Length: 179
Image 1 (cartoon, rainbow, N blue to C red):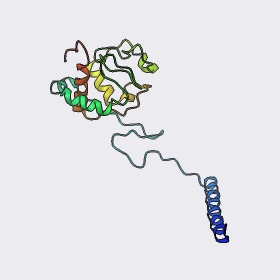
Image 2: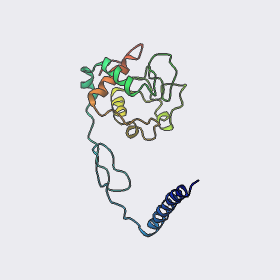
Image 3: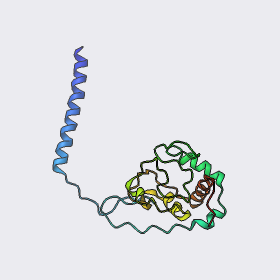
Image 4: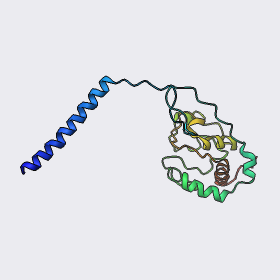
């Protein structure tokens, strides 16, 4: 190596060490005060940390009237886009990361005996998936069933949720009657 290359390498190495030492000393000297609330509030995202108590979520609209105007074909497209990475829909298809959703509407919460549900979901095994339960779950799964393994933020739009529920209703040999 030439002398100039050695000098350049030494300069980069020295700068890196200087920044590392400065960062270490800075962490030892400065102790920032924890904020009581989030500095920037983003609509629809709950505040993190132990700050001020979260505001009460607005009530979801009842899904019954929305189902009357719901479009199952639109729901199939939405489910294909949002749900198909983790779920299958046709009768007899294998489970993926999430269970196969055939027969879910009207069936028990843990409707597939061949799927390993979270303890939170398994505790609701006997409770059926009605339209309102499905509406609340699809709006915010982790908020509706605390401890669910489903890592999906939810569908905010009520009409889109109704379309997806209308589609899921069709995934049955005997679809549940509409409310």
